[in-house]
Image (cartoon, rainbow, N blue to C red):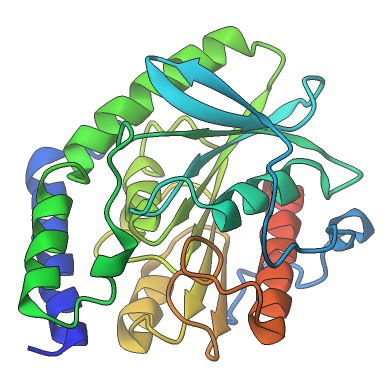
Length: 283
């Protein structure tokens, strides 16, 4: 079985688990209200560090989960980050720091909980180009990364964050890869969030789209299905933005991003500017 076929099978497994176990009530193409031009404040992202990045935030505990927190305590807007299945990687932490303070007109307090509680997937399992890797990834998706389990933790985290940060008036959410699926599932009726972004999302399901109730950004890589993303985009009923990075791999904004490669680094920076611009308009 090819890696793409294994990924398709894994996507089906997780989507089925999500539908059976989650209460969902808990491009290039823009909606007519969108502008492709970000605010001036969104264009001042700091220089991206290719190797040896040292995070700027602090580590705290939220609802029992180790959590990376970054951004000014005076921020009035908050963003929850759902990392990819590989957990806390320097590329993902650097992305959180970029989101926190790069928009000079609107800074954010960012929180990234450790939903896997210190036991993320091994990055050597990806891509799943052997039966053994595919089996390990499949087991991880059905256990540690099962959507019902994650969403339960996420809801509890948000309850505590809202209580402990009363000055934050609105919340956004960003998810990478697997985290993009979680974002779709928590951006439906009754959501705690005002705007959402998915970065190279895994398990894109057009059937999720009509249920999304908040503005949503999708940043897609060369490895996402154009057919699935196109159908998903067409089915959205909310303000939307889809941007394709056809020369970048799945995961380039997070754990799999090779930031020592100038081309990847430039795409990484541009993609984070896009996320900032979207939140500046919708959050």
